[in-house]
Image 1: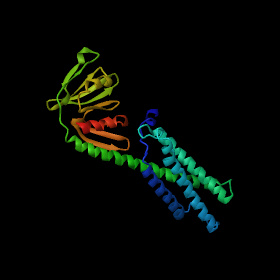
Image 2: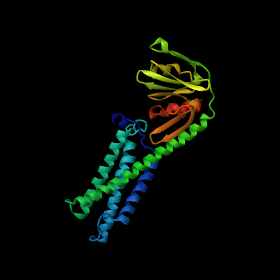
Image 3: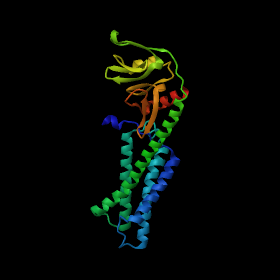
Image 4: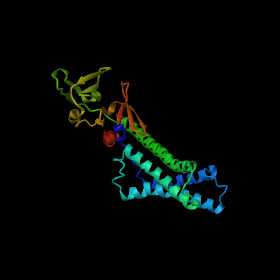
Length: 281
């Protein structure tokens, strides 16, 4: 669970895009209040209704503006997209939910003069806080999906232009009987497996797998001169020339390799280097 919370989740630090999102979410809250009328306005004067609706929309607008524009502008290091993770995103969304619901309650109490409101009214005000936060989460998921799909398409095009290079890789094992020497261009992928690594490579028309007592950290030194082999995950090293397809999703990339029946993952930590390897190859 803790590992999941520490997974990267890039913060949307494009302030111009955030300003548009805030504007349209505020309009959505206004439309929701006017169309569905979650609060009973039948006993209210027209002036009170206008004040309340304007106040609720304004509180949503202000909280989102402070959370998505003001704070990221004042403290850019905290909100840097490469250091933002799922835990921070959850806490930040909870903050916005509490702030919007709290400001709605204060404004509602000021207009009505009622500070002791019913559970039903509290639920309605909480709903007005959940609505913009839910929309914001959906927008962020769509943003990440579009970002990774677009990057995946570009990488797939560049993979078609890659050229193979030939050099030897000597896999030294802690045990002498499971060492391996292969041409670098025959290596498909290397997978970490406890204290071992699983080396997948081509031999003629077939694909072989060999377990070697070693680590990916040691292997990284062996592949420094290979422009087409890259560390892409804490558990994987991959030969980009064997990538058939790159698929994007909100969490990152999945690679489908020639001749293998399992995907290889690209984590946010290695995403920048992975893209650069493909562009330079």
